[in-house]
Length: 283
Ligand SMILES: NC(=O)C1=CN([C@@H]2O[C@H](COP(=O)(O)OP(=O)(O)OC[C@H]3O[C@@H](n4cnc5c(N)ncnc54)[C@H](OP(=O)(O)O)[C@@H]3O)[C@@H](O)[C@H]2O)C=CC1
Ligand SMILES: O=C(O)C(=O)[C@@H](O)[C@H](O)C(=O)CO
Image 1 (cartoon, rainbow, N blue to C red):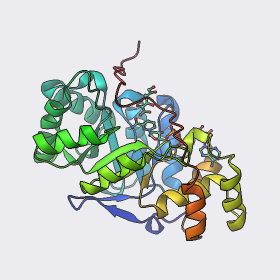
Image 2 (image 1 turned 90 degrees about the vertical axis):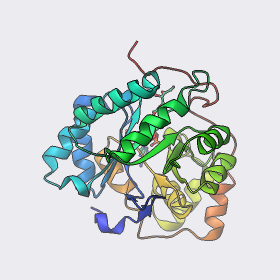
Image 3 (image 1 turned 135 degrees about the vertical axis):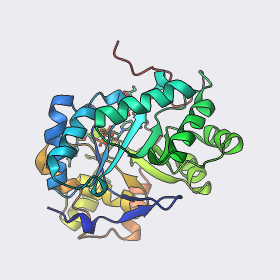
Image 4 (image 1 turned 30 degrees about the vertical axis):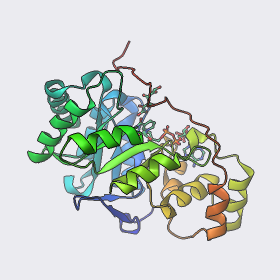
């Protein structure tokens, strides 16, 4: 087990701190989520990333209650479903998430996707600003926001997002979006940080992993950590779960970081934020 104290905190632009490595639970069925999160907490994780659209917030909440840890020892992120964008509907959806999670306060609440075709993300952000002002969310942020979406939010609203959670892995690095995010003082959080497993077999990754006697996943996750990104790998395998956070006993050289940087090849795995418009309600 990694001691939670070994995992560095990232200080967000409002002073709230978040453990740099967290557990993502996308695609973990609700009835398996409690066990997954409990195992993660035992392995040293203190940061969990879920979403209303993952339909497993209740499992996360059950693990929080069963853990015996104080609520303020675990950082919980959840996200607004695309179909709930809009001022009143976002406020109601937040209440629903709070109930599912069984928490008073959400640590980080994200607008899951911009859905520009609906043109509701500015109005939605106003609701997020209210939740933040009320203290119901300790930090508010966005996900899948491209530079143009960030620019509009910055121009038309008051609270600068604390986080932009975007797809980043060795073969898809979104450098322009990372740069625009950081330029606005917003932390970059990498989702699908292992390329959903697809980047693990790359020979350049294997070479770095072999040099340090670690797994390819550890090599990639250490690359994220040294590149100042918050990172939220998913694993339901207890051994992989444990090693994915065991990143603080080795360090990549600048050449090794550069070797992984060089794998960028525009290999997006997820949806395109410029056009994605799915509602995230079960069909
Ligand atoms: N905001 C957004 O739009 C999005 C957010 N996310 C968030 O990011 C999180 C992580 O992204 P995700 O897409 O799940 O992909 P990841 O890059 O985290 O990859 C997960 C896959 O890699 C496997 N894996 C994990 N660790 C290892 C390891 N050490 N060795 C070999 N295989 C491994 C997992 O299998 P196994 O479980 O069997 O170990 C799973 O198949 C999500 O769970 C979610 O919280 C993800 C997508 C979009
Ligand atoms: O995992 C997420 O957080 C996502 O938003 C997406 O992966 C989404 O749910 C999806 O699968 C779109 O194709």
